[in-house]
Length: 194
Image (cartoon, rainbow, N blue to C red; front, top):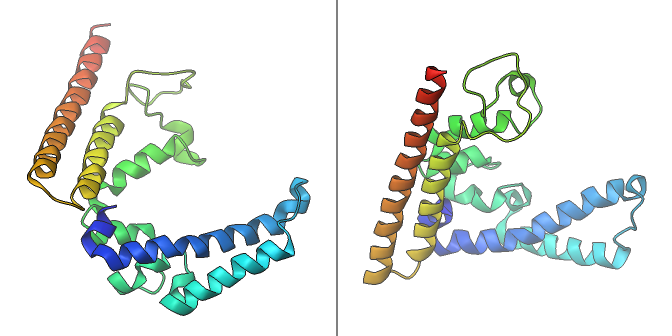
């Protein structure tokens, strides 16, 4: 959202038409595995239609448009941009460590086997069930992300009311972030007393 806001209407248009690229690529993946999944094929007529839309989009926007983030390529001058390149372009790449930390508990890997966001300290224990610990970072980052995305959308048609709404949302995001940190510290203090 911030990338599109920063680069304006042409990028929004390219992002919109990139759905034709994604639909065709998804259909090719589906077709590759549909038999093994026990699913019905998409059908030749649908494949031809999807391929036609894909070809038309690539012809309209250029060869790099066929790539995963090809819609953003001309705006940042990278032929095969990755999501990180979009983050960097709008100055939010500094939040990547928080994303990686949150990913440890979701995606398989050696770090995720030992690092548990919901535990107070690294331990040999496994976390079984919900935890009210470890919500500060995800909570405050979610609050700020929602504030920034909402601000990007509201600012499409700026008025005095929308500018005021943006300021209020960002103030509420800051208040929510402070509350998450305060609760985290209180949980830590209570655990230290045990």
